[in-house]
Image (cartoon, rainbow, N blue to C red; front, side):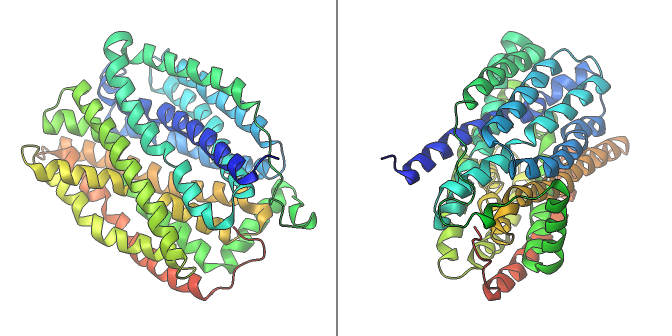
Length: 424
């Protein structure tokens, strides 16, 4: 007989690989920032719109709908359709000649990618035991550092051979082929084997939205986790200018900057994801608020290190040490926040709750963080300020400090709140 837990970990591995491809596609635009800004004659603000708001608005708006679909439809087929769409549009980006054409491609890439995470994490929650949900989410979100890191490294290798346009087409083709394999996956029973048929009943899209709104009004832990996540990820939006920063203000060649950035995200991000998942789950065993408390403490420690990285020159060991820790810190919140929001809603809203968290973290956090950094970089450049991108990134990081009190207070409330029946 097939071991359901072992099958769950195999499913986790496959979905994590899809998330790697997800973020590799998404960040390939960032990897070629200098080339694309020059080739398409974009301002930094226009570029950050493409990497942020243009993508994120459709990603999160459709994500709420996709989360509801994930609670009602066959999830592997849903994932396969989204993967085929975003991969085809990634390839089409290589044909774009202006801001509008890249923007249209990014819109539909966002629509396609919105399907993956709600469906994937709800499948994992249905397959794996509750006490492993935090670690499972953290492993799934290894797709971020591996995908982002691989995207930069892939760009550094393929860019000199195919140019930025050809590199987009190659990666898009890989995704279309992968979509066919996803159709072979089985959809696990919703809620696993532990809950009644009544608990598995899924309502309409309207009922999903109504249920989420009710949860936000009646569950302060959920609301503070959502805003805390948006705050924590705000500074990550500014990182879309990293290649511009490395090249223009730290003196690196584009391929070298791509390779270094890729290595930092790959190795630092993996460490951050694993430490975040294990550390959060270890503190969760001491009390239900432990995961959020872990995040608050972690951000108190890493916030000054991120500032040190931006203000230190590359000729000191401190620069690379701070860069590595900063890259690791980007991955700290994912396992905790995604596990927490699923604890705060009924089982039939798991997929929709993940989409809601994506709305807060991706749109309010990453997209507006990117737009602010691009706007400030253009303004600071126009005013003649030294190192305008450096200071744009530093200023964009200030709102992220609000995550510390939000996560801390949410942890206190969570510890006193009784769990929902059949919560994650």
